[in-house]
Length: 155
Image (cartoon, rainbow, N blue to C red; front, side, top):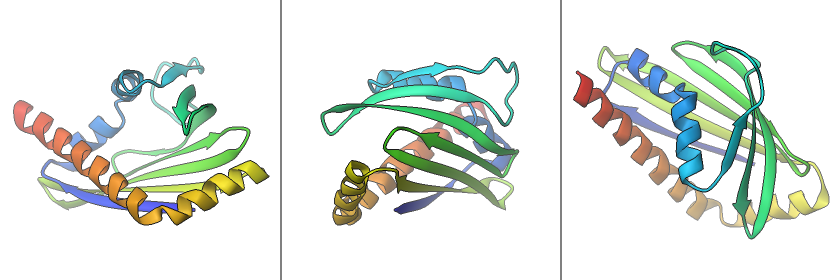
């Protein structure tokens, strides 16, 4: 199952990429939302191979996953792969410079079930696809506005 959303941000591509690759900030944000996130690699710089273990509540169950940065191409793209007992996922982050001060952020999530219970979960997500896409678009729009506000505070 694939979800995709895009939003245009009034900020230069370099600034937007710095914000979406601020992994320490993203970890703190996930912790504030109730997820547990722990970095498990020993890399000192941002690079392919960075890995996190995460756990979070979804539909009344604790889900555990391992997330790895598999593509890192500043300032235009990043990709992450997540693996759990039930699901495999891939998150692609793509940035396109529309002008010097405007950037398009495109997020694509692809989920693949690994067992029967995950197939049922993905099937239920497909049935709720339109409402999930609306929520996904709204969350991405909020994130894009946050990036714009940060840019205007420092610019």
